[in-house]
Length: 139
Image (cartoon, rainbow, N blue to C red; front, side):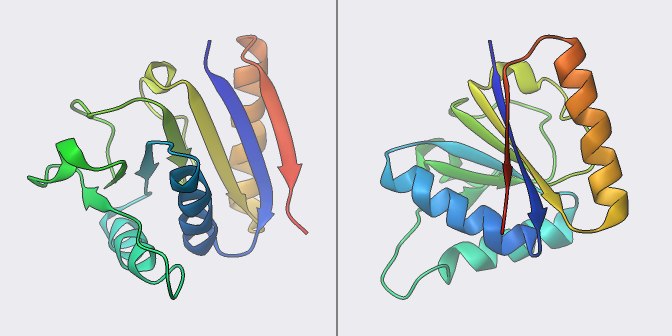
């Protein structure tokens, strides 16, 4: 069953997701970063190049020729197939379609009230479906 981790009180979702990707990649994890829209996907793509001065995070946009070989995929849609289903990082305000394909889902919730309200609704929906949940509040 998919494990779902909520990370709340995040001031900058893109920067946080990039740091989370760095940590996952360092542990040999493979992940899909789900952006809310094309602009946020472009910001994630750019952020992964600059997450650290000495870090290299191999990544590709979904649909790119290199995506099947990349441990980190950036997308604004979960339609289609991906080369791996280890981890999903959700930066949207919606429950991702077919999230159950992933072993683990990270829900990134910002400090904005509308984002927090949408996150609370998702938390309750996941809980009602008996998914294992954890919650981390960023300082």
